[in-house]
Length: 182
View (cartoon, rainbow, N blue to C red):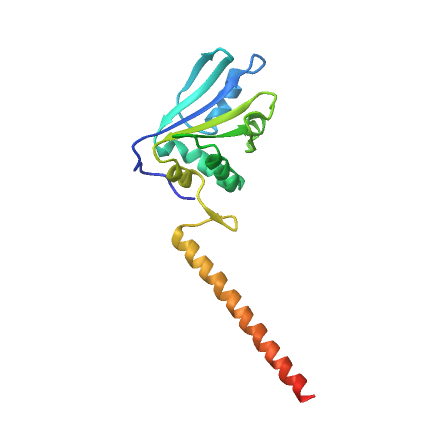
């Protein structure tokens, strides 16, 4: 997994939030949020209830999520959801909070009717495509690869295919020669 170090962007803001339901312990919801991002937990009173959120700036705020989705092997799913939800300079992905509480990641739609509600992971940036490449990089056959590694990997695969094809052609020629001799 790559280490996220520098910020070549004008701005990157990350907000992770969850609704605090009356039946839940605040500490449990805080612990779930801290599994996604480090920072100070803020209480936000809204018309539709109380929300807990963590707001952080810079690509370093994406490190925990990047490592977690790589470990859980859901990079492609998160990547597609982030690209699918881009609107202007904002994108989001939603996770099942009960699964997160049990140290698993499960991507959900915002309106899936999850009993306790989802964890919302929002990214605001002037260059979302590059940010998504950082948090959920491109993969090939389920492996994260740099462009150079990908090119080398594809060249090896192509070389194997060509070699297999050569061997099949050679076997076919040999078979044809054998049949001629009969």
